[in-house]
Length: 196
Image 1 (tube, rainbow, N blue to C red):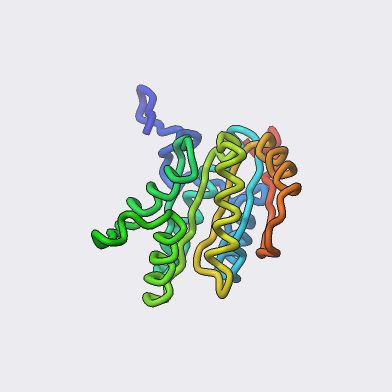
Image 2 (tube, rainbow, N blue to C red):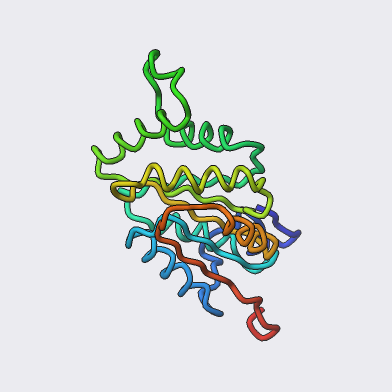
């Protein structure tokens, strides 16, 4: 965490303590609404706001307030491909494959993860921060994977947080033929001078 010469820690740094989370200006309400959406079975959730408006902090606060049966994987670095996303998810949840399962397709491996989650009565929430940096093809494949994995019941969910450019990328995805997965979209408004 960044500190100045008198020991002040900036609440705007990426690793700011959650005690600095500003509940006003609808931020606390958005965390609660997204949490309710996750627990209610929404599989595809988006959060749009501009830089510095609190997207990352909302995502971190949300993770802190999820029940134990929801495994949260936060992907904040830019990923090149869908396969890279999936490998990071497997690594983060510490899922190991048997030798004979290592050559399976990504989808088949994800089905094994899904089965394991269902048996443990758990869900997986994948959080993409800076979602505007995702390649459109990666976003499309991730969205299609959600439809396939959640065909019977929702056990894998995604929260994508990004700037307004991300909203434009989502509009392009409307051209794709997705199943009718449950979706919910949120937006954070910029803080006013009074609120800062």
